[in-house]
Image (tube, rainbow, N blue to C red):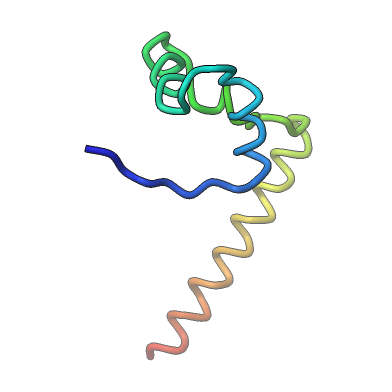
Length: 75
């Protein structure tokens, strides 16, 4: 059985470059079976640690605000 997944164009280009003459499924399976992570193929972790931490903090505070607004609207 096969499943479709949706990925951004930039991730597609990275996977395509990495796969060579293999299928995308073979590439992903090889990476995961070899103890790797999908992030090793898709290019995640491209941010400097300081930038990552700052963004994570910003996203967390934005998410908290959203939850609070949703709570206010349901009361």
